Image 1: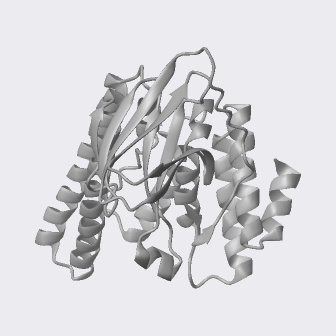
Image 2: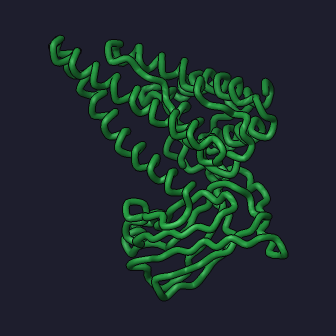
Image 3: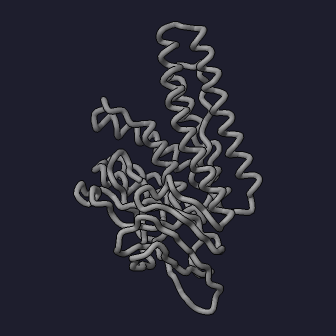
Length: 307
């Protein structure tokens, strides 16, 4: 994740992989088009990737082992770089999975790890990837309809604007119901807590773009529960905070205006994130380091003084 197009690294949390007498779980991965080289397994904590194991591959199959001493949360498999990514200094090919003390089997393709990924064993990850794909499709529909709603209202074409606004409202409510049901039906699983963070404010298409933006800011955290410390071992909370900060960014702002806007955003974020001390400290550290990268000392000092 990036904060306003600048990569942020948060302090490393300690993750131990202690192999002993505790129950072992296998992570089996079937790979197509995988070049020879090292495949790295690591844990995710916010924007931080912490490598914990690696395997050299020259075949179509690799396997990792985890046990009950390993944190529950989101793990990432780094498959290596494509030739183009190496040339352009871009990131590696990766995919994520949820580890919740179960055996996992995944098949994917080096060239398109997310699009081609199939969960062959792991009910939790089957559900997660179902929701991730639904989320991906929803974002495309949402952005397209949002632009159409604004376009037809601006043209004062009320008939089409009504039609598009109704459709815009309908897909949002349908998506929110989908997420709510999936989370509720699987409340015993870690993935349910992650799915809940995907919920967003429903923005009425009959409002102006500016009114929707303000509603988005006001209602953004109403469905986010910051009390789940286990989500520190994922990017769920930091992704949510990042999305909220972006809503305060305006390309036409001066640095002083941008800092003033971020002070307001920080107040909202940290007021909502104070339900669990571990989560609170995690989010605060994420914000401070992010604004260090942006060289916004005014915002950093404000956080340190007031929070």
